[in-house]
Image (cartoon, rainbow, N blue to C red; front, top):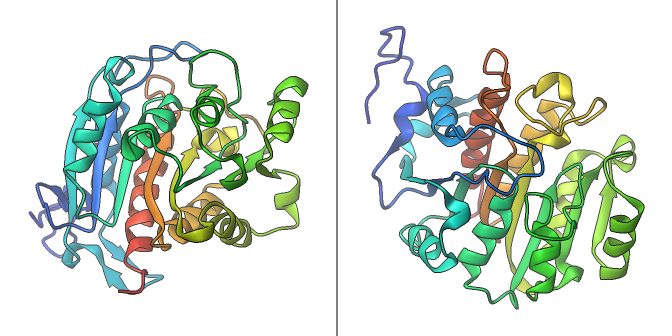
Length: 299
């Protein structure tokens, strides 16, 4: 791994230096470029590459945990799968299986269709020992196949709703019909309003207990439209009054610290809409927060 930052300071290794071909790394990274079934039109440019580039803006040192990620094995960069909407689950499973030695696989979208693609591929379509946590303003219970339907698709394919926890659901961002469908399915919902009196850390811990009951492996979806629109201009569906970036950073570190969390996706960023790299830089920080969380796991 190189140590030279953009400033030429050898004592300030950029976080992008963590990326490379490191089969024994604790964390792996895969870009899934999904966009063709989006409810809203979006760029065909690669968001995963923009997030990788944004890692150059950060160092490898965590003050909170007093640890330097530079010395913890790196991130195995598995590259990108272009036009992932058209790629079979079996092919995506092969990509993810390359990182079977990793403790956590981070999947960069792409739109929220990534959640269905990644979890179906990782599980091989067998959801009997799987739980799902979403941090999202939306229920993702729409009809059809789009970035608005991954939760419904997974339930219809056999994922037990009793092990699905959806956090951050916002007012005026869901329909009465889909809210009723979610209630009937029997999953757990923690709304944005409830998070005003429940810390994001406590919500994450509650979600882990439900999704990971009986030793289930967990997929976590972080849809950045859960964040206040002022902070994520590159997210088409974000609305005013969402979570703060700091809350979502805390969530990512806490979630990734649980050994049951097997895969985590970061979705719904359109780099053509972004301003001053606000959104992709936050996504890059979420990658680092997740890495730091993995290092908290008890050996």
